[in-house]
Image (tube, rainbow, N blue to C red):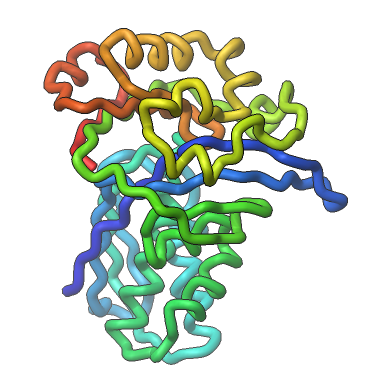
Length: 272
């Protein structure tokens, strides 16, 4: 009964650099994995059909549409996979800019590849899972990565935040894609992302930004207040992840009072 722990990610910088002819936008961002994880277990089903059991943070929608089940369906188009009993404990909140569903999908593909000796290479798994979401492929390797295009063109970045302490806060606010893009004007960043990210985090506050904050923070004062409170508490860098609504701060020291300070919001603290 294999069990894996799909991790979340945060965005370090997020720039909308140009509008594409297809109506989408080209982005620049850095994905960084964090130790906030779901729990995914797979075993053979005792019946003729797949069974998926969800627990933890509620997930909206039909389980048949869950990305984990879509991975199973996709792989069955090429491989013989018996009926499965899938147990997913959701600890990563959705609608948070943390990639929880994408991570579940990527970890599921890797686990089934191992369980049933499918012989897929890392690159093949990345290609397959990328059809389910632009950031899904990141979670196959799950290492610091610069993402461009619509978030699907990856390159290595020389970055380690080992030893830094993270405080992540997710309020109940929902941020729609329309809201996030409402005041964004595509442009190249003032400070090149890769150059900034490979420099000292002490400089990030003045050089590393999330373009979506321009739209989101004025409309969601709760998110703005969380960011400001993280800085008041001594964060070296604090920013919204993705298009929100979670905000995270990097600290040099542990923040044991964070859950109390940011109650009643979802709060995660951990060392990177």
